Length: 315
Image (cartoon, rainbow, N blue to C red; front, side, top):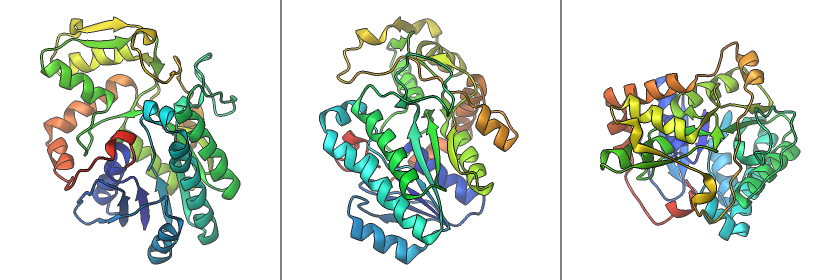
């Protein structure tokens, strides 16, 4: 049985949905946002409560754990460093320790933001350097996980897709504003390698199935600016790409500093799985196909409760 934490988040909800489509036994845990998925057991759990977490694992005895739960709002983390440290580092450390004792597989979801953006096409062997609290706590989480469970797996990601929650990935945010007749700012100097959540979920299950351990960069195969990504989203969904206007990161006035270039090299994961990671066009094409197939309505219809926790990105 696979246990997915943060099951109401962007990646978590799509992982649970894919697990059921593939006939896998899966349990999803969430904190504040309840979710219903046919054939999956969904449980409310406060993972910051160590005794509650231990009881959960003793009861379920999972064979594999995918830890997606995190505080992901970069500006919130900057203003709440202690809480971010607890959620992004202390919690995965505790879960890694529990799974190490049981022998279950453990996969920790990290971020491309562990790099400062001074370079490009970062490989797993490149030394991280963080520029904000969010990245620092996620990097700390990586170290804690590998210390407690050297056989664990870590995936650094940057994803977009269809959310179960009433919140927006980058692609959804672009489409929301375009549909409202507004212009969309796109950062010309922010470079990343986005991957669709559904594609990422498939790769992560492949990683678990093949018992791959250690650190992997699991992102799209193509580096692109957020400006160009937004233009491609606009084109695929029938909007005028001229309504995406160029902007630089420094003009945005965000509270926390962001790295400019977090492009990652995917040679290691591609070699291990014998397949290339999808490029930008393929991911956006599948994003549109998912909406056309009714997938979006299905995944958004699974959310049964909302509360005031979304600000922190705790899922």
